[in-house]
Length: 475
Image 1 (tube, rainbow, N blue to C red):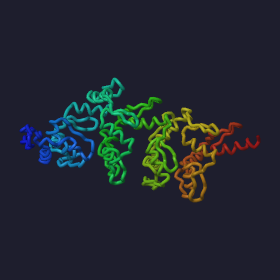
Image 2 (cartoon, rainbow, N blue to C red):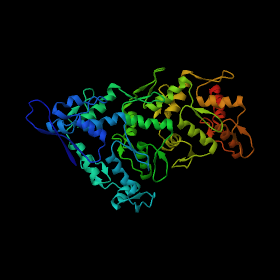
Image 3 (cartoon, helix red, strand yellow):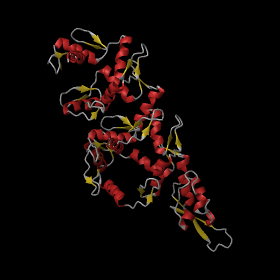
Image 4 (cartoon, helix red, strand yellow):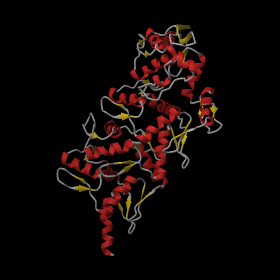
């Protein structure tokens, strides 16, 4: 390190010499010029407040005011201007100073002789390999004595424990939440103010923090720069952290009411709303409330008619990517979810969960009119339309009305001549799977529907209902 001394020319200044800068040998000339500009000891910290953020401050002792403030200001401004002059030719990563670049270069030059047997990733030191291997094993041997949170290393545990010991003297005036640092409070307050100064140049969406904008931009570019070491799936940085837990089976966040566990804190928060009944996301068109923002966004597309996701095989369109994926399983025949009781397979987790309630006898959703119970809320909603007579789904071809979307979808296949379900015995085709199942009972002789009055058996529920009317007429 070198010191730069200059003679003060301030009239009447008794101090003949003053230190104006301490620069590392690798600082560029621009930085030196900026530091030299703070000579004479006249400038104060206020003169060098950073215009880009308005709140960044630097050490306020006299020695730092005279020596370092200009240099720090220069380095800090590069965060806002993104002035990264040093571009490393191997990986293309950019740096604000040559010293940072040289530190980074060592990552490329160091020999990585310790190889992970699971994913093949190399490390320069054995300790780093051992640390990495815990991702695959899920081993977290260090536990917090206060909250029980587990960490993979002692250093991470010590960092975590500071959260409990540190004084949270910065209090949010809106919600009362406390923070250890002023910067964390300012970061939090943007939730309440709704301030979103970082705007996506492509779609115009605003974000409270630059890191969130950076993650969002991957949506437009399709870039997923972080790969899972186990399965190779490409993800964003936050997505990778959550995804890795699916391999380890780790679910560190537990619901205090029902004990259900989750891989992320955000998923736990969404789940908590089931117990509280909180639905903070409101549709501005119809007023319907939703647990999560993603559900609200999918719903809003019903009003706009927007269906941006198309099936490449039949060109059917959907409001969400998840619904498209479920639909595609019709073509592939894929049913990755199996009932643990009877082995029945389902294309979606929701279908499996709803079905398993049949075995458990669980029907938590009750009709307030007739008292009938249902395994899922969607079944209850469809049933309630029997009492109200509501038939909101209308065929655009013939105008026939239906109480459920499924009924309308099956009906529309009649006009289209579409009959995708066929009997393997006789080859007869049907518009829906339920119609096919009823037909198959002709071949098997199965008659699972029983009249409670006379005990007669029927192949379908419709035939049973028609039969029951005979008893009603007699009575």
